[in-house]
Length: 441
Image (cartoon, rainbow, N blue to C red; front, top):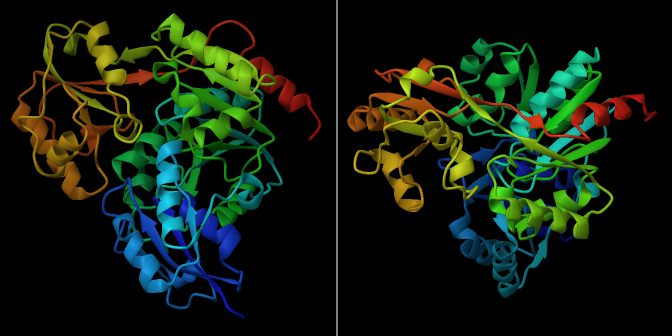
Protein backbone atom coordinates (compact mmCIF):
# COMPACT_ATOMS: atom_id res chain seq x y z
CA UNK A 1 0.00 0.00 0.00
CA UNK A 2 1.25 3.46 -0.88
CA UNK A 3 0.83 5.62 2.21
CA UNK A 4 -0.17 9.28 2.02
CA UNK A 5 2.58 11.30 3.65
CA UNK A 6 1.21 13.80 6.15
CA UNK A 7 2.36 16.88 8.07
CA UNK A 8 0.24 18.01 11.04
CA UNK A 9 0.53 21.72 11.85
CA UNK A 10 -0.01 22.44 15.54
CA UNK A 11 1.02 24.02 18.81
CA UNK A 12 1.38 21.03 21.19
CA UNK A 13 -2.30 20.35 21.74
CA UNK A 14 -4.93 19.76 19.07
CA UNK A 15 -2.24 18.40 16.71
CA UNK A 16 -1.37 15.50 19.04
CA UNK A 17 -5.05 14.80 19.70
CA UNK A 18 -5.89 14.66 15.99
CA UNK A 19 -3.01 12.27 15.44
CA UNK A 20 -4.07 10.02 18.34
CA UNK A 21 -7.72 9.67 17.35
CA UNK A 22 -7.52 9.86 13.56
CA UNK A 23 -4.07 8.95 12.19
CA UNK A 24 -2.27 6.80 14.76
CA UNK A 25 -3.55 3.38 13.70
CA UNK A 26 -4.33 4.02 10.03
CA UNK A 27 -1.73 2.35 7.77
CA UNK A 28 -2.91 4.34 4.74
CA UNK A 29 -1.30 7.46 6.26
CA UNK A 30 2.28 8.17 7.30
CA UNK A 31 2.72 11.25 9.49
CA UNK A 32 6.26 12.42 8.74
CA UNK A 33 6.34 15.47 11.03
CA UNK A 34 4.47 17.78 13.35
CA UNK A 35 5.14 21.49 13.01
CA UNK A 36 4.80 23.81 15.99
CA UNK A 37 4.15 27.51 16.58
CA UNK A 38 2.64 29.99 19.11
CA UNK A 39 4.43 28.49 22.14
CA UNK A 40 8.20 28.93 22.63
CA UNK A 41 10.60 25.99 23.05
CA UNK A 42 8.24 23.20 21.92
CA UNK A 43 10.09 22.29 18.73
CA UNK A 44 13.10 20.00 18.42
CA UNK A 45 11.32 17.26 20.39
CA UNK A 46 10.00 13.86 19.32
CA UNK A 47 6.46 12.61 19.62
CA UNK A 48 7.57 9.46 21.44
CA UNK A 49 7.07 5.90 20.16
CA UNK A 50 5.09 5.06 23.31
CA UNK A 51 2.41 7.54 22.21
CA UNK A 52 2.89 7.29 18.44
CA UNK A 53 2.03 3.58 18.30
CA UNK A 54 3.27 0.53 16.43
CA UNK A 55 3.34 2.24 13.01
CA UNK A 56 5.92 4.74 14.31
CA UNK A 57 8.61 2.79 16.19
CA UNK A 58 11.00 5.76 16.01
CA UNK A 59 8.43 8.40 16.96
CA UNK A 60 7.66 11.55 14.97
CA UNK A 61 9.76 14.72 14.83
CA UNK A 62 8.33 18.08 15.95
CA UNK A 63 9.76 20.85 13.79
CA UNK A 64 9.30 24.64 13.52
CA UNK A 65 6.40 25.80 11.37
CA UNK A 66 8.86 27.97 9.43
CA UNK A 67 10.28 24.73 7.98
CA UNK A 68 6.97 23.70 6.38
CA UNK A 69 8.03 24.34 2.76
CA UNK A 70 11.30 22.49 3.31
CA UNK A 71 9.51 19.52 4.92
CA UNK A 72 6.94 19.26 2.13
CA UNK A 73 9.64 19.17 -0.53
CA UNK A 74 11.98 16.78 1.27
CA UNK A 75 9.29 14.37 2.47
CA UNK A 76 7.04 14.45 -0.63
CA UNK A 77 4.07 15.41 1.54
CA UNK A 78 0.62 14.79 0.07
CA UNK A 79 -1.54 16.11 2.91
CA UNK A 80 -1.18 19.03 5.33
CA UNK A 81 -3.50 18.98 8.37
CA UNK A 82 -4.10 22.27 10.17
CA UNK A 83 -4.56 21.60 13.89
CA UNK A 84 -4.24 24.64 16.14
CA UNK A 85 -6.51 27.48 17.21
CA UNK A 86 -6.93 31.20 17.83
CA UNK A 87 -6.01 32.30 14.34
CA UNK A 88 -7.91 34.35 11.79
CA UNK A 89 -9.74 32.78 8.88
CA UNK A 90 -7.34 34.66 6.63
CA UNK A 91 -4.31 33.11 8.37
CA UNK A 92 -5.76 29.61 7.88
CA UNK A 93 -6.19 30.22 4.17
CA UNK A 94 -2.63 31.51 3.86
CA UNK A 95 -1.47 28.16 5.29
CA UNK A 96 -3.84 26.35 2.92
CA UNK A 97 -2.37 28.26 -0.03
CA UNK A 98 1.14 27.33 1.09
CA UNK A 99 0.18 23.65 1.10
CA UNK A 100 -1.67 23.82 -2.23
CA UNK A 101 1.24 25.60 -3.89
CA UNK A 102 3.43 22.63 -2.95
CA UNK A 103 0.91 20.24 -4.53
CA UNK A 104 -0.51 18.89 -1.26
CA UNK A 105 -4.09 18.61 -0.04
CA UNK A 106 -5.12 20.73 2.96
CA UNK A 107 -7.41 19.37 5.67
CA UNK A 108 -9.35 20.65 8.69
CA UNK A 109 -10.60 17.69 10.73
CA UNK A 110 -14.10 18.26 12.09
CA UNK A 111 -15.66 17.41 15.46
CA UNK A 112 -17.18 14.06 14.46
CA UNK A 113 -13.77 12.85 13.24
CA UNK A 114 -12.03 13.85 16.50
CA UNK A 115 -14.61 13.55 19.30
CA UNK A 116 -14.18 10.90 21.97
CA UNK A 117 -17.45 9.67 23.51
CA UNK A 118 -17.80 9.50 27.28
CA UNK A 119 -19.78 7.20 29.56
CA UNK A 120 -20.45 10.26 31.73
CA UNK A 121 -22.24 13.47 30.92
CA UNK A 122 -19.95 16.10 29.41
CA UNK A 123 -20.32 19.86 29.71
CA UNK A 124 -17.93 21.60 27.30
CA UNK A 125 -16.81 25.18 27.89
CA UNK A 126 -15.32 26.79 24.79
CA UNK A 127 -14.89 30.32 23.45
CA UNK A 128 -14.58 32.43 20.34
CA UNK A 129 -11.20 33.88 21.46
CA UNK A 130 -8.57 33.26 24.12
CA UNK A 131 -9.28 35.33 27.23
CA UNK A 132 -13.06 35.50 26.81
CA UNK A 133 -13.66 34.00 30.25
CA UNK A 134 -13.77 30.22 29.92
CA UNK A 135 -11.95 29.67 33.21
CA UNK A 136 -14.36 31.60 35.41
CA UNK A 137 -17.30 30.11 33.50
CA UNK A 138 -15.96 26.58 34.15
CA UNK A 139 -15.51 27.39 37.85
CA UNK A 140 -19.06 28.73 38.07
CA UNK A 141 -20.45 25.58 36.41
CA UNK A 142 -18.48 23.37 38.82
CA UNK A 143 -19.80 25.32 41.82
CA UNK A 144 -23.40 24.89 40.68
CA UNK A 145 -23.10 21.17 39.88
CA UNK A 146 -21.32 20.44 43.16
CA UNK A 147 -24.12 22.31 44.93
CA UNK A 148 -26.48 19.78 43.32
CA UNK A 149 -24.46 16.94 44.83
CA UNK A 150 -22.70 15.92 41.62
CA UNK A 151 -19.10 14.69 41.51
CA UNK A 152 -17.31 16.92 39.05
CA UNK A 153 -13.94 16.32 37.40
CA UNK A 154 -12.32 18.94 35.17
CA UNK A 155 -10.40 17.89 32.08
CA UNK A 156 -8.31 20.72 30.77
CA UNK A 157 -7.22 21.32 27.18
CA UNK A 158 -3.60 20.11 26.74
CA UNK A 159 -0.49 22.12 27.54
CA UNK A 160 2.24 19.44 27.21
CA UNK A 161 5.43 21.44 26.99
CA UNK A 162 7.78 18.98 28.68
CA UNK A 163 8.43 15.23 28.41
CA UNK A 164 5.48 14.03 26.34
CA UNK A 165 5.69 10.38 27.39
CA UNK A 166 5.66 11.32 31.09
CA UNK A 167 2.84 13.80 30.48
CA UNK A 168 0.53 11.32 28.72
CA UNK A 169 -1.95 11.32 31.64
CA UNK A 170 -1.64 13.88 34.43
CA UNK A 171 -3.84 14.11 37.52
CA UNK A 172 -3.78 17.20 39.74
CA UNK A 173 -5.46 17.08 43.14
CA UNK A 174 -3.05 19.09 45.34
CA UNK A 175 -0.67 22.00 44.89
CA UNK A 176 2.18 19.53 45.39
CA UNK A 177 1.10 17.82 42.17
CA UNK A 178 1.90 21.04 40.28
CA UNK A 179 5.49 20.87 41.53
CA UNK A 180 5.74 17.14 40.89
CA UNK A 181 4.70 17.61 37.26
CA UNK A 182 6.95 20.69 36.90
CA UNK A 183 4.07 22.82 35.66
CA UNK A 184 4.63 26.04 33.75
CA UNK A 185 3.01 29.30 34.83
CA UNK A 186 0.41 28.86 32.08
CA UNK A 187 -0.55 25.45 33.46
CA UNK A 188 -0.70 26.73 37.02
CA UNK A 189 -2.98 29.56 35.91
CA UNK A 190 -5.57 27.00 34.85
CA UNK A 191 -5.15 24.32 37.52
CA UNK A 192 -4.63 26.27 40.76
CA UNK A 193 -8.13 27.83 41.00
CA UNK A 194 -9.79 24.41 40.68
CA UNK A 195 -7.39 22.65 43.05
CA UNK A 196 -7.89 25.38 45.68
CA UNK A 197 -11.59 24.39 45.71
CA UNK A 198 -10.79 20.71 46.19
CA UNK A 199 -11.40 19.62 42.61
CA UNK A 200 -9.46 17.10 40.56
CA UNK A 201 -8.06 18.28 37.22
CA UNK A 202 -6.78 16.01 34.46
CA UNK A 203 -4.64 17.00 31.48
CA UNK A 204 -1.88 15.56 29.32
CA UNK A 205 -1.50 14.15 25.81
CA UNK A 206 -3.58 10.96 25.45
CA UNK A 207 -7.13 12.19 25.96
CA UNK A 208 -8.69 8.77 25.48
CA UNK A 209 -6.72 7.37 28.44
CA UNK A 210 -7.35 10.59 30.40
CA UNK A 211 -11.12 10.28 29.95
CA UNK A 212 -11.20 6.64 31.08
CA UNK A 213 -9.38 7.65 34.29
CA UNK A 214 -11.54 10.69 34.94
CA UNK A 215 -14.81 8.82 34.42
CA UNK A 216 -14.04 6.68 37.49
CA UNK A 217 -14.20 9.79 39.70
CA UNK A 218 -16.98 11.81 38.04
CA UNK A 219 -20.72 12.06 37.56
CA UNK A 220 -20.15 14.98 35.20
CA UNK A 221 -17.00 15.76 33.20
CA UNK A 222 -16.24 19.42 32.53
CA UNK A 223 -14.25 20.03 29.36
CA UNK A 224 -12.32 23.22 30.16
CA UNK A 225 -11.20 24.35 26.73
CA UNK A 226 -8.05 26.16 25.68
CA UNK A 227 -7.68 29.06 23.26
CA UNK A 228 -10.83 28.91 21.12
CA UNK A 229 -10.40 25.25 20.22
CA UNK A 230 -13.20 22.75 19.63
CA UNK A 231 -13.96 20.19 22.38
CA UNK A 232 -12.09 16.89 22.35
CA UNK A 233 -15.11 15.09 23.86
CA UNK A 234 -18.63 14.91 22.45
CA UNK A 235 -20.56 17.35 24.65
CA UNK A 236 -24.01 16.78 26.07
CA UNK A 237 -24.12 20.52 26.72
CA UNK A 238 -21.87 22.96 24.88
CA UNK A 239 -21.31 26.45 26.30
CA UNK A 240 -19.41 29.06 24.28
CA UNK A 241 -18.10 32.27 25.87
CA UNK A 242 -17.76 35.45 23.79
CA UNK A 243 -15.97 38.70 24.59
CA UNK A 244 -17.62 41.91 23.35
CA UNK A 245 -14.34 43.78 23.86
CA UNK A 246 -13.37 42.01 20.62
CA UNK A 247 -16.68 42.38 18.81
CA UNK A 248 -16.20 41.18 15.24
CA UNK A 249 -13.73 38.45 16.14
CA UNK A 250 -16.57 36.00 16.70
CA UNK A 251 -17.01 35.27 12.98
CA UNK A 252 -13.48 35.99 11.75
CA UNK A 253 -11.42 33.53 13.82
CA UNK A 254 -10.80 29.79 13.55
CA UNK A 255 -12.32 27.74 15.07
CA UNK A 256 -14.12 30.33 17.22
CA UNK A 257 -16.89 30.83 14.68
CA UNK A 258 -17.54 27.08 14.68
CA UNK A 259 -17.86 27.14 18.48
CA UNK A 260 -20.38 29.97 18.19
CA UNK A 261 -22.45 28.06 15.63
CA UNK A 262 -22.32 24.79 17.61
CA UNK A 263 -23.19 26.19 21.05
CA UNK A 264 -26.28 25.23 23.03
CA UNK A 265 -25.61 28.17 25.36
CA UNK A 266 -23.69 31.39 24.61
CA UNK A 267 -22.33 33.51 27.46
CA UNK A 268 -21.72 37.14 26.51
CA UNK A 269 -19.15 37.98 29.17
CA UNK A 270 -17.76 41.33 30.39
CA UNK A 271 -20.92 43.27 29.53
CA UNK A 272 -20.24 45.51 32.53
CA UNK A 273 -17.03 46.88 30.97
CA UNK A 274 -17.78 46.60 27.23
CA UNK A 275 -19.46 49.29 25.16
CA UNK A 276 -23.20 48.79 24.67
CA UNK A 277 -22.76 49.07 20.91
CA UNK A 278 -20.29 46.18 20.96
CA UNK A 279 -22.60 44.02 23.08
CA UNK A 280 -25.43 44.76 20.64
CA UNK A 281 -23.17 43.87 17.71
CA UNK A 282 -22.41 40.48 19.28
CA UNK A 283 -26.12 39.88 19.95
CA UNK A 284 -26.95 40.55 16.31
CA UNK A 285 -24.23 38.15 15.20
CA UNK A 286 -25.55 35.40 17.49
CA UNK A 287 -29.08 35.93 16.16
CA UNK A 288 -27.77 35.46 12.63
CA UNK A 289 -25.37 32.53 13.13
CA UNK A 290 -27.02 30.55 15.96
CA UNK A 291 -30.57 31.71 16.71
CA UNK A 292 -31.38 28.47 18.59
CA UNK A 293 -28.76 29.10 21.31
CA UNK A 294 -29.79 30.35 24.74
CA UNK A 295 -27.96 33.57 25.55
CA UNK A 296 -26.68 34.56 29.00
CA UNK A 297 -25.25 37.97 29.78
CA UNK A 298 -22.55 38.05 32.43
CA UNK A 299 -19.93 40.18 34.13
CA UNK A 300 -16.51 39.22 35.46
CA UNK A 301 -15.94 41.83 38.19
CA UNK A 302 -12.39 42.04 39.50
CA UNK A 303 -11.35 42.09 43.13
CA UNK A 304 -8.02 42.54 44.91
CA UNK A 305 -6.93 40.77 48.08
CA UNK A 306 -4.82 43.82 49.06
CA UNK A 307 -6.45 46.94 47.62
CA UNK A 308 -4.40 49.23 49.90
CA UNK A 309 -1.23 47.96 48.23
CA UNK A 310 -2.50 49.45 44.94
CA UNK A 311 -4.00 52.78 45.91
CA UNK A 312 -1.67 55.69 45.16
CA UNK A 313 1.27 53.41 44.28
CA UNK A 314 3.55 52.97 41.28
CA UNK A 315 2.56 49.45 40.27
CA UNK A 316 3.81 46.85 37.84
CA UNK A 317 0.90 44.95 36.28
CA UNK A 318 1.32 41.27 35.38
CA UNK A 319 -1.46 39.84 33.23
CA UNK A 320 -2.47 36.38 32.01
CA UNK A 321 -0.05 35.60 29.17
CA UNK A 322 -1.97 33.93 26.27
CA UNK A 323 -4.83 36.45 26.53
CA UNK A 324 -2.40 39.20 25.59
CA UNK A 325 -0.21 37.39 23.06
CA UNK A 326 -2.12 35.27 20.54
CA UNK A 327 -5.40 36.41 22.17
CA UNK A 328 -4.75 39.95 20.82
CA UNK A 329 -6.00 41.78 23.94
CA UNK A 330 -4.19 44.98 24.88
CA UNK A 331 -5.05 44.74 28.58
CA UNK A 332 -6.59 42.40 31.12
CA UNK A 333 -7.94 42.27 34.66
CA UNK A 334 -4.75 43.78 36.10
CA UNK A 335 -5.16 47.06 34.25
CA UNK A 336 -8.86 47.11 35.20
CA UNK A 337 -7.86 46.63 38.85
CA UNK A 338 -5.22 49.37 38.65
CA UNK A 339 -7.90 51.81 37.52
CA UNK A 340 -10.54 50.52 39.92
CA UNK A 341 -8.27 50.79 42.98
CA UNK A 342 -6.68 54.06 41.82
CA UNK A 343 -3.03 53.19 41.32
CA UNK A 344 -0.81 56.25 40.90
CA UNK A 345 0.97 54.85 37.84
CA UNK A 346 1.25 51.64 35.82
CA UNK A 347 4.95 51.25 35.06
CA UNK A 348 6.02 50.76 31.44
CA UNK A 349 8.24 47.65 31.77
CA UNK A 350 9.78 47.82 28.29
CA UNK A 351 12.93 49.76 29.31
CA UNK A 352 13.55 47.23 32.10
CA UNK A 353 12.67 43.96 30.35
CA UNK A 354 15.38 41.33 29.94
CA UNK A 355 15.88 38.11 28.00
CA UNK A 356 12.93 36.49 26.30
CA UNK A 357 10.46 38.81 27.99
CA UNK A 358 12.09 41.74 26.20
CA UNK A 359 11.60 39.87 22.92
CA UNK A 360 7.95 39.20 23.73
CA UNK A 361 7.26 42.89 24.38
CA UNK A 362 8.95 43.79 21.10
CA UNK A 363 6.89 41.20 19.23
CA UNK A 364 3.65 42.60 20.66
CA UNK A 365 4.13 46.39 20.62
CA UNK A 366 0.52 47.02 21.72
CA UNK A 367 1.49 45.75 25.20
CA UNK A 368 2.41 48.81 27.25
CA UNK A 369 2.29 49.39 31.01
CA UNK A 370 1.98 45.66 31.71
CA UNK A 371 3.80 42.33 31.49
CA UNK A 372 2.35 39.06 30.20
CA UNK A 373 3.06 36.26 32.67
CA UNK A 374 5.40 34.32 30.40
CA UNK A 375 6.75 31.29 32.22
CA UNK A 376 7.07 28.31 29.89
CA UNK A 377 10.64 27.67 31.06
CA UNK A 378 12.83 28.31 34.08
CA UNK A 379 14.70 30.90 32.04
CA UNK A 380 11.52 32.83 31.29
CA UNK A 381 10.55 32.79 34.97
CA UNK A 382 13.98 34.21 35.85
CA UNK A 383 13.52 36.88 33.16
CA UNK A 384 10.20 37.84 34.76
CA UNK A 385 11.80 38.06 38.20
CA UNK A 386 14.67 40.24 36.94
CA UNK A 387 12.33 42.53 35.00
CA UNK A 388 10.27 43.10 38.14
CA UNK A 389 13.43 43.93 40.12
CA UNK A 390 14.69 46.39 37.52
CA UNK A 391 11.30 48.12 37.25
CA UNK A 392 11.47 49.00 40.98
CA UNK A 393 7.71 49.09 41.59
CA UNK A 394 6.14 49.99 44.92
CA UNK A 395 3.73 47.08 44.43
CA UNK A 396 2.92 44.36 41.92
CA UNK A 397 -0.57 43.64 40.63
CA UNK A 398 -0.73 39.93 39.86
CA UNK A 399 -3.68 39.27 37.54
CA UNK A 400 -2.35 35.86 36.59
CA UNK A 401 -4.46 33.17 38.28
CA UNK A 402 -1.17 31.53 39.35
CA UNK A 403 0.45 32.44 42.67
CA UNK A 404 3.58 34.04 41.21
CA UNK A 405 4.89 34.99 44.65
CA UNK A 406 5.30 31.29 45.45
CA UNK A 407 7.57 30.85 42.42
CA UNK A 408 9.67 34.02 42.27
CA UNK A 409 11.13 36.56 44.68
CA UNK A 410 9.07 39.69 44.03
CA UNK A 411 10.35 41.74 46.97
CA UNK A 412 7.42 44.19 47.21
CA UNK A 413 3.75 43.84 48.22
CA UNK A 414 1.71 41.77 45.76
CA UNK A 415 -2.00 42.34 45.20
CA UNK A 416 -3.60 39.24 43.70
CA UNK A 417 -6.52 39.90 41.41
CA UNK A 418 -9.49 37.58 41.24
CA UNK A 419 -12.42 37.49 38.85
CA UNK A 420 -15.50 35.29 39.00
CA UNK A 421 -18.42 35.01 36.60
CA UNK A 422 -21.65 36.74 37.64
CA UNK A 423 -24.71 36.22 35.46
CA UNK A 424 -27.00 39.20 34.91
CA UNK A 425 -30.68 38.38 34.68
CA UNK A 426 -32.27 35.28 33.17
CA UNK A 427 -31.58 32.75 31.85
CA UNK A 428 -28.62 31.92 34.05
CA UNK A 429 -26.32 28.93 34.33
CA UNK A 430 -28.09 27.51 37.39
CA UNK A 431 -31.46 27.23 35.63
CA UNK A 432 -29.87 25.78 32.48
CA UNK A 433 -27.83 23.22 34.44
CA UNK A 434 -30.88 22.17 36.46
CA UNK A 435 -32.70 21.43 33.20
CA UNK A 436 -29.62 19.62 31.90
CA UNK A 437 -29.37 17.34 34.95
CA UNK A 438 -33.10 16.54 34.87
CA UNK A 439 -32.98 15.64 31.21
CA UNK A 440 -32.50 11.99 30.32
CA UNK A 441 -29.35 11.52 28.35
